[in-house]
Each structure stands twice: as structure tokens, then as C-alpha cells.
Image (spheres, rainbow, N blue to C red):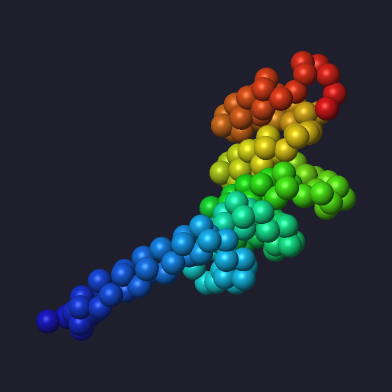
Length: 170
């Protein structure tokens, strides 16, 4: 028999432990356990970081804004984690009263959306986060209508048609 055959017996246990911890994290998200979700942003597994970022945004944990911004802007981070962090930032901008912090996050999201070197998934998440805000930055989004990435271009057009006055400033 091959040397690796004993692993066959442990494989279901490994899958069960991963699924259990993800279920536990989803339950923590539903209960808005902030400390556990903030700790989850620094976990090794990207799925845990993604769920943690999503939960922090949904629970409106404004104190996590710097950590989420760092995840969204980190080029070494997995794209789905970056996208979740960008969407969470959009959620947090909705509940924040701090205009300076909201403006800096807004600017970072605009940079993410406009950068052609970033994966479309992240750019779309940044556009969705901008669309969720009361002032999406129509002048900054207008050039994205002509973006080479078709999905980004279509989403920018959708935001402009829904939230921005034609030819007007916002």
C-alpha cells in the first residue's frame, strides 16, 4: 500500500473541523461577536478572514475600519478577502458619523475601483461600496464607464444612471 493511505481515515475529520469552525464563525457573525470577528481578520485561512470582514461590515463595527482598509488595499491578500473588506467598508461608511474617516475610505475605494491592475472582483466590490454611500462620487466614477473591463464599465454605468444626475456634479 502507498505511504499516504492512513490519511484517508483523517480526511473526513479535517473537513468536519473546517466546516464546524466556519459554521461557528457564521454564528458569531449573526450574534455580532466583535472580538472574535476582529481576531478572525488575522487568521491563516482566507475563508475565515473573508467571513470576518463581511461580519464586521454587517455589524457596523466602525472601530475595525483601519483593519478592513488594510485588508482591502493589501496586494498580497486573496482577492475574495479584499472584495469582502471593500464591501464591509461601504457598509461602515453608511453608519459612520466621522466625515474625515469616511472621506478617506471613500477615496481609497475610488482608487481601488479605478485601478486597472486590480482584479475585477475587487474593483466591482469597491464600486458596490461606493454605490451604497449617499454620495458615490459621480465625477470619479464617470471615467470608469469607458473602462476596458466590461463588468466594471457596466457597473459604473449602472451607478451613474441610478444615483447621479446626467452631466451634473456630485
